[in-house]
Length: 266
Image (cartoon, rainbow, N blue to C red; front, side):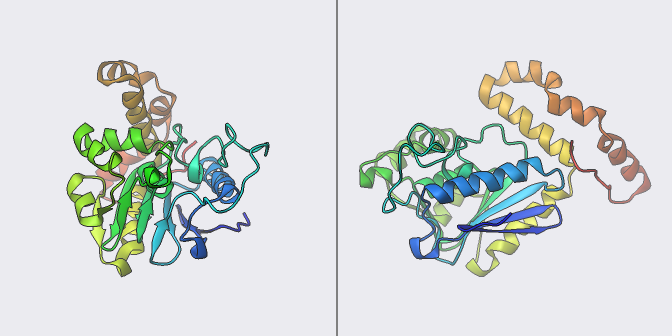
């Protein structure tokens, strides 16, 4: 697809999406949010794409969050509750709760406000050494209403989350790693290679198994421990995993001592 505010590259089963508003520190206005929503719609719909990487252009910013300078028509029919975002939220991802496939955030520079919310909405975050994170909306009279409040409490527990949320302070990459927000911190020049290494590890697994795993994780978040355990065998994604060819291929490959050849998920 043709894009104006991001770059999309496909290599094998991996799609890399680079937010490309360098002059605005990769802050997103309405049109950029809607474009990213379409990009991730297509990612979900394309069975040949198994993992996505989300990053920002340049080395200063993953995303500075919402572009507050560019006006938006609240009557635009694309708007969600009068906001310049699609129904799937900021960056087309923060409210995409039914997402079936993994997304890795490769955070270069700072991820602030909605930029941090977009990273938090991803499954794995890797960061450059110079990266920093913050839900800084209160500094401009707003609040982290793109899922940031809920996700940071879920990630950090209440006290650490309160310390971030109520001060709007920024956290450096090393502290984000210590707190468990980030999976790995690497020198800036190695960031995309690091993200691709994580993506390749996921691609080495059965995509049907990964989709089933994400579905069970979501059922746990939605319904809690006991209900999730009781209902998970009835989830369509789990049933598809057991009915698919990968479960046979995995055992056969193990017996034959060779890498498995997975099929595209249905």
